[in-house]
Amino acid sequence: MLVEFLRQDDGGDDKNEVLKDIEGLPFEWLVSETKNGKEKYLAYYPSPPYTIESCKRIQEMIKIREPHDPFLWSLYEVSVKGQASKFLIIIYRISFLIGL
Image 1 (tube, rainbow, N blue to C red):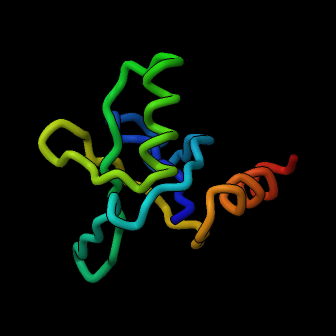
Image 2 (image 1 turned 180 degrees about the horizontal axis):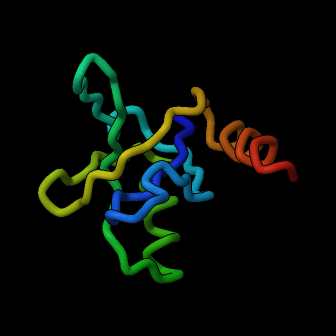
């Protein structure tokens, strides 16, 4: 799934401000939650800090659809942007969304 990570609520005025983090994630890393009749999506994702090595490892985990670890990973609110069945299609869609 192609998702955009939403900024966490830090109590400021820009609660709905969107980060420019777009990622292709395995469907299994997503969960949906219905609150007040509205459905929202959350994604399991490894917690920071992110190093070059950890980013490479995350990309490999995405590529091989490795199962997430619900006990060690954080949940982040995301906006689902679309489906992509192959990693290269995800990269193409990301470049289209950000205007490359």
